[in-house]
Length: 239
Image 1 (cartoon, rainbow, N blue to C red):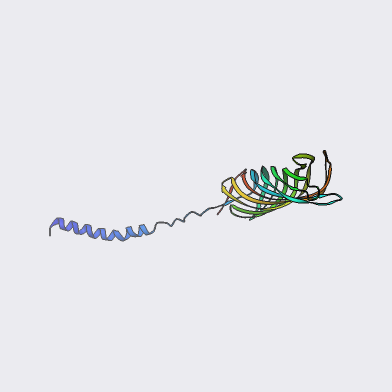
Image 2: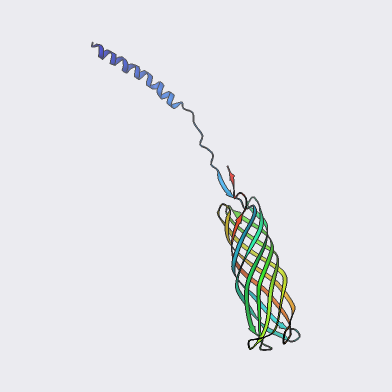
């Protein structure tokens, strides 16, 4: 037999013998477990500061003391202001406190059914001090709020364009509300909020050319858009 053919046959036999061993080595490679997935969850805890703006309507009823009902009107307009607060999250529940201060221009008037004069009210500022309780779905938060309100109001009476009496005061009342907030970036959130301010009736003395003694009752319904910045870490990790 040719010597070269003999050597080729021996090589093929040797290769066939070693192939199963190589396959066994490949199959014996250790299994590596895939790394655990990490889910990030929005954390509403921490101090925040923000701005707000919107509109409102204040319903005012005037009674001339000792005489009778003069009428009522809705004082409407816009408002802009700011808020600062702190929230604490426990599970999906969120608790907080907040202070808010706004400039306002809620203005309206009616013609008195008794005197024919024009009765005008204007709310030019208000503040809210409230507690909050909410429920969060990750970066979406719904909440209810309630507490105290303080409102600055001006009152004017005029006839034929001439002011006959006026007054201004700062009154305390109560407020309740609800809101929806969305965390759209690590430390930023935007939301919408409704508030109702209760101002019980009170006696008001208007001074001027023709002083008047009125019993005035007001309340306010208000809608706001809010933008908040939260200090601290925005998210926590869950494995």
